[in-house]
Amino acid sequence: MKQLLINDVPFNVQDVAEFTTSEEEVGLEKRILNNGEKDKQIHQVKFSFSVLGEKEYHLYDSFFGNTHFNVVLPETNETFIATNVSHSTFYQGSEVSDNTEVVFKVTLSKS
Image (cartoon, rainbow, N blue to C red; front, side):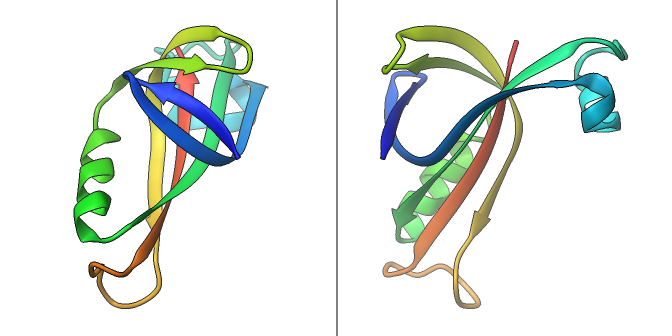
């Protein structure tokens, strides 16, 4: 498990990946984020983490509702500002209870 620091909040994350894609590879959604620049390279960080219970679910769902984040990768000391491309949640059952494990999958794009 690795750690990220986002807006001064530590996250123990699973499956963290950094990658660069061209504008054409990722489609219309990213062209809108980059004001129509088709040849711009997009640097993204994708990661997942899990929380337990309804309170934690709502806390982190609200946190990733923000649009801009200060991100620190402790392993490399890299710091950058990122925008939220997407975040999604997965859990078993029809609703979240105090005993439900909720997995968040987040994609941030370096600004």
